[in-house]
Amino acid sequence: MERRTFNKRACTGILKTDFHDHFLYRVKLDELNKLATNAGYEVVEEVIQVKKPTSNLLFGAGKVQEIRELMESQEIDNFIVYNRLSSIQFLNLSRRLEVNVMDRYDLTLEIFEANASDSLSLLQIRLARMSKEAPLRKVIVSKRYKEEHASLMGSGEYAMHSTLKSFTKREASIKKEIDRMLREKKVQVTKRKDEGAKIVTIGGYYNSGKTTLFNRLTGADKPVSGKPFTTLSAKYKKWLENEKVLFVDTIGFVIDLDPRLLTAFEINLIDFQYADLLVFLLPANEPPDIVVLKLSEGLKVLETIPVQKQKTTVLLNKIDEADRENLDQILDMTRTIFNSGNENRIIPISAKTGENIEKLSKHISESLL
Image (tube, rainbow, N blue to C red; front, side, top):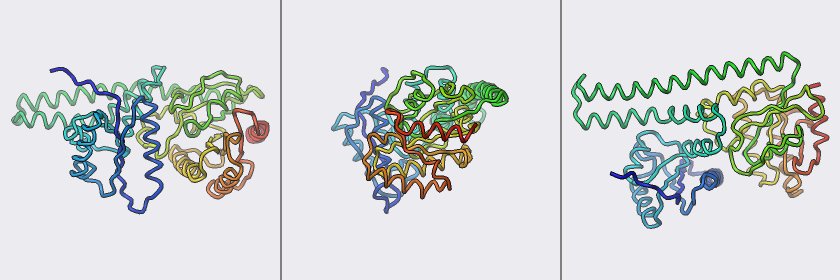
């Protein structure tokens, strides 16, 4: 039997569980649509349902039938869900819809894989996929052998355990290799700091201008892209003004970042944990409500990593593209949320034009040197 080839037309969906949410769900779905488009999908339909999730399908059974009919009529082969799908939900949706089903975690890993250019990134992506697939494999293998009426300790049950054991063994082997690389990176970073280096980590949301700022401060020529997750592997480079200061560009954040990604990409978090200073970028050319949401979500993630708040400076980038009234509103809201107690740790800049870069450089010098 030939394996089906899916087209790139997609329907995105979200289950809204908060009946009073009239804003956040739309932001999340828009974010999902952007990610899907950047992954090469053509988003042609959206599905939104407001109800409590069901354990077997996430959406209601009637809604799933509507989705199937919609996708059949529009010749859509991909259903991309914002919500996290359990193994049972994924399996049942795939069978009911007979299309390629994925959640936001799967989509993010697909983008990671397309941008990965080094062995470490590929290993971490592979481990992240296997961690997600492990429960699903258990469900699929268990169902398969139960349908074949495997007797206790019979050949069917033995084959089931053998299949799962082989998968677990491969997963453990990859984890062991990543742990080795993790120890090596910690040694390298510690050695740099022991030799007197100061590390400034550039963090923030994708398309906030992190790489543009990195290039301006270090003289590097890294390619700049508005697409998400183009920076997966961190690279250190000396500051043009003082070679003792090393800057590192990092992977971009997304709204409502899946905590499993933090676990899977543990090596990337070292650059945050060992930073002497973290500059966290936000795009000041976006609506104030979106910027404030990104700041709030970002601070929560930084606390999880963890990064000490007193080592964090918020940069409102792209002020050359921002409306003055909106920028003033963003500044006021940022002061309230960040509550840094130090006005110098909220700096509006333009990494593109260089506006206020001198002010940022002075802040970096005063903070580190």
